[in-house]
Image (cartoon, rainbow, N blue to C red; front, side, top):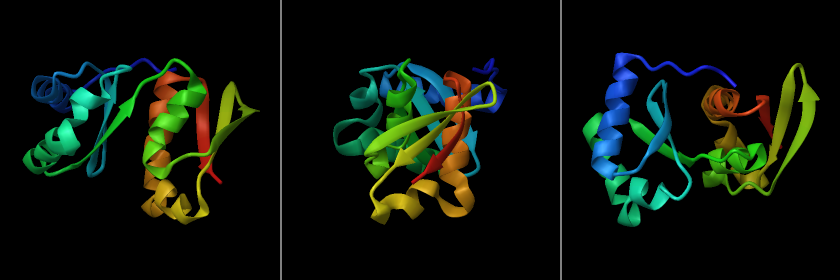
Length: 141
């Protein structure tokens, strides 16, 4: 796990998200055109709002994509939560370096989307997992 330090921009996003949603945020990642908020367990309904209304308003306000992920101490659950939009079927771990490599199995129809353009989703997933677990690399099967 990595020590997390926020810059001024990230702190501003964090504060705004917590004020607007009432959800407690554990981490915030600014990735290109996307903001990823890692919220504490049970906070997803507050963070997203009825029918996703709260997140939609924030997207329009910030002109950025927003992904909300529920935190878990359990690496397997956290990996599944990160890939939640792609309905992960299972996660396998293999030792790698000082940590583990996670292979997420999704429906073949979702594989390209789960990886993202130029591997963008994988990069974001890896950044979250490295900050909050012993997973130091991830792939989609």
